[in-house]
Image (cartoon, rainbow, N blue to C red; front, side, top):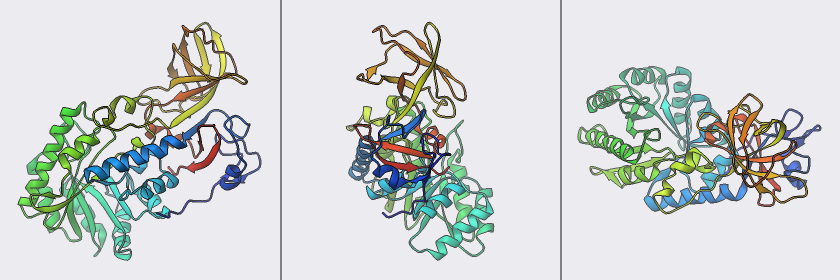
Length: 410
């Protein structure tokens, strides 16, 4: 799918790039730069070209085999280049979380967007209704979980129409109705609300503790959809949507299938972090530990050892401004030193971070000393809070050559 990429100039204000004189993306890539030729400056976040291609193909194959539509969560990357790569691989559309993210995705050229959140801003709701009326090929879905949310939507659309999904939650979770009675009340209210079309149900299981909890919850979500079909509140189609990157196999098992009690259904999976995977949170929780398949971590942060002030302590020039820290700290992978082969770093752990620094503590039993100036290759945990720290990200191949630059628009 052809999307529109905002113009990119790499210049003095572009973090991670050393470009005193601004250059275009195509000029930078055509120059044949490498990670360590001086065109990039540290710290810098890079994207592994081969890993991204593999991961996209892996989820495209999984969703095709299981009969799922795929709307990968765009809030992970907010990158039009990465949106396009996933759409080109067969994704149905893109998921977002906010009105601004919706507007950005639409401006890039994405025409199917699922807002996996309640939308209560009248300005956004009016824009959705106007856009759907003006663009027959555009589809925008969003969540409702209360009578109040339905009323806000109905009041804002001003003669237009919007398409909504009833969000089903769970106790002590985030948003979403908490019972069948609440679900029925909201769905019945939507059926009477002018300009509001209820087309299905939606869920988020990614924060649950284990497979069993996810399965139980998703079975309850399917039961709500069946109840709404039986009540005549979902007649022509049923959209079922769910999916973080931890239980998408369970989503396919429970919510997949061609119909809900005889009404044709479409199951839209929303996994987003799969795209770059990681060395932490998702390395431990990917469904590909249970079903056939494999994902590769695609993000690295490269940073230098800037100080070794004490035995067993090394200070690295990357911190909270550069790496995720909300769901695990970076993992030290390898040490790179000019004129030497990369060496795996063992026994050193990132124990805390400041704004611009990370603390490495330990002692490598193999004798791989860290010295000032060493370049460290760091793996990250939780890609959703990695991309937002960078506006331009070099894509590198196996030879550490820069083959592309992707942008983010948070």
